[in-house]
Image (tube, rainbow, N blue to C red; front, side, top):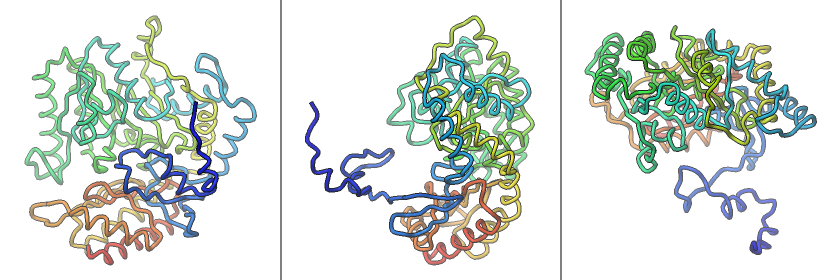
Length: 441
């Protein structure tokens, strides 16, 4: 069995050549890929193989909240590896218990139990499973403007184009959530947008049949869909509607949680309590894959005498748990969430808003903490999205300026690590300004 890969001996130290020979990349046609080799990183900076030091305005998959190579997290993983590198989920393990305690501490009162997963997709998968079992109902309602992951039910719950070639799960219904800049409800104010979006949701529930709906699943702040900041009272309205019809409410904090918005959880800024919370990414900044489901007491209690038919070989993996503990403790000790809040308020927000005066393609700037979107349009009246070629020119010009940018359709997502300093944030905005100018945008 196997085959001869002796040719690999000649490229064994060539990351790019080995990648193109053997690595199959996600979300891409494979032929024309040209991945950049990264050697190491520190804080908000990445070191490329060509010797350049890059200011990262993406946090990769918007998950490196604590920054690269944080010494406390690296040390936490090392200590756990030396003590016990792996153990199955059926055992009690101190790192797992401490990680669950620290995660639950950030949730609202009454959320004491955590089911660990490997990422955000399987967190949402198991949250939906729990909701269906608790309610005895089938349907999950979610937004067209959302992303919940790439496993079976999670991708069907997703609203964007990636759902369509993967839509095999049953019982998913989509609706429109507030997005005043591109309002589906002909609203002119956030108050109108909120009220009409809630009316729309209730109509969808009534037409689908409340007795068929297990849960409403919503990101606290839609991330991949555009970092769309909901009106202040939207989630309180959703909570009232779900309670009215006996429907559970699942809040997806996978991208927005653990400091990204300047709060431990983004829901902290919206004054409501869901039934289930999902998380991943920033819980340990992706140092070791981890995610999970935080259950309210009524949901967790249901499974006191009913078997939860879900599990993962690496649920609560000790190395991931050690990384969570070290990350959570360092974030609290170093006031990293406060830093994200202050940098967003004092530097990123004002700095990005100031770009509007110099760049006629900017249609809207929105965000909080270190979670911002700059939406670019070809025409302010029609709000026609700026074309892909122009967006890619901006990315290319930013690369020349040693700035790593994240682009999603016609939006630049500014999502640096939560540890970014005010000076680094200002420097990043200045480089973005120059890149847009050089790109003619």
